[in-house]
Image 1: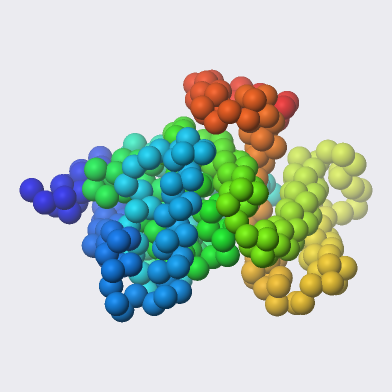
Image 2: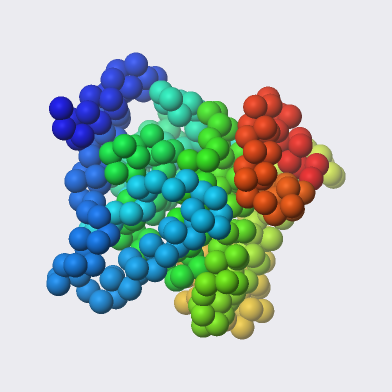
Length: 358
């Protein structure tokens, strides 16, 4: 049986034993098989006269990053990110996330093997939007749909060539490309079923620490300057969104003085959202950056709701705790991963408490 056929049988069997429709699982199987068929080893792309010089340069850079990840960050040394695929689209999948009108807690969807996660991915953008519309209409939830440049198969598909580099992120600036590769590889080190925040915050911490190390030791001054300019905007944006999440949580939980006489919760929530957008515009003006530098953030802010804030929290909330754990581990990657694996064995509430106390 060919590799492709074996994968189809494997994933189809999961679909039939799972907790959602066979149709949804089939689009997942088909989408991943198309991705794998499109992927070719990086040396093949480099040897192909039709490959542009720009793409060749990025592929060569990615392989240096891949070697760095294994040698310096002690991330898995396997076939992942040794192949490349051009999918001819801007995202590999589109995620649907949803949250109640007065909560930032994400709705979860459950899958075989992976457990329950706070998103549902589609290889077709139109299908993702239809799912979001259905969830909003039938469950009364706020929804968000966003494109994802990469996803991890958690090392389960390394026997079939691993996760490939994709056109959806290969042209990222150097620091961001490093972050992407390190983040996705981190998912192969530790993954806990049913805990999206733990998994994504861990991978986000690895990408951040790893990219800083790459830039300090491997990158040019120009690459470091480019990264710092973008990262300054990202840090400012995350500071603002964290403050807004805290404000919204206080409103929803009716604490910290937000039980206001004469105002219903919807009115207070609307005021908080408007204040967030006003503060964002003020932050942009004060930065002195050209407006187009904020374009990616503009799109997020325009559609911001509980679902998008909740999804952001999953990637950011526990990062400071993981960074502190890395420091306590003597900045030794092997010791750090062992400590994270020990945390992963604890009940979810205990894991979060340990990390938030750091």
